[in-house]
Image 1: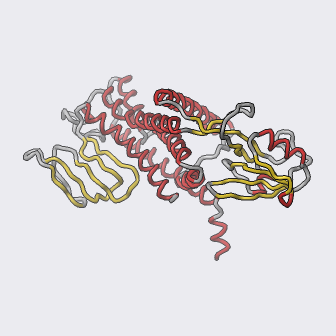
Image 2 (image 1 turned 120 degrees about the vertical axis):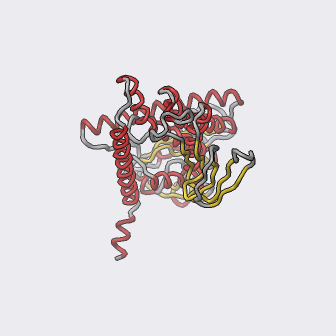
Image 3 (image 1 turned 180 degrees about the vertical axis):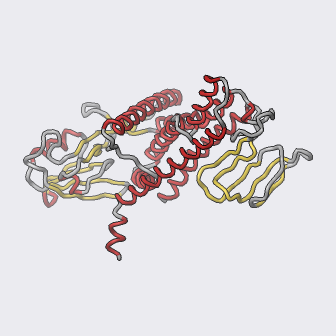
Length: 385
């Protein structure tokens, strides 16, 4: 189920991104040779015959000579792609070629993918606010149904040893052997109980992904002032629903907030790279995102939609970076062309994009290797042999 959800999320994000390029290209009179769902090899495709006006099917990777777009279904179900005529600089004299269009038109086509990722995030956040999303509320707010959840678990603390995880809902708390148990409704109730039972074993009744757990641990008597006795942070949440128009407004605000937070984090990452020559921030690759997907899926649909929206924003921002091989890098070369009054050497630009693509592949492999290593895979493999 986790793999399926991961494939669906990744597929939708990439497909929507490519759909943006496709729609704006067609809108501006640029031919799209093929628009495919999934990645090649092609399973089948269909296109409108320019002579008869009828739709025709083509199976496999058979080459098709047509002035119309081939809409294809491909074997690898991860997103999609679009082949735009002239995207590599050919056919500059042809009216329906990307290379023959004005700088502004080319920038619009390249930037449309990023815009679609932000639009998708907006829609997903709006849906979340409309169907009802958990929001943090104060203890003094009276609501019919609320939850006290774990918002942070610090390393090397009793909470970590107990197996408490972020997102866990505390439904009850007891002393050893289930004496003096009571249900939890407010943060202060948990905090007071832990303070009163420092040094004694307590039992926390936890709900996690529909599963009820009982976790035992001993709150510390002596502990750092910034950690607390157990080493957790708590949040009281309640499901809050908004009207249709309020959801649209809240969704837009959420996108702006996350864009700002991601940009600040990205700036901090780059700054640390140059100042300290190291990057302590945690970066997740495909394997890491799949693990996060499993954790989010256990929390429910609302969390999956929020997670997909955040990933969509991340994808949009990364593609907007002025780095070769990315949409932002291609836009950067167009801006240089406008400033200097003539195009950059095609060989130089293609070489830059090739090198940039290879660097991105190396980075992805490195991050993936680290994600697998963090899972203890290589240690288990070593022990196996």
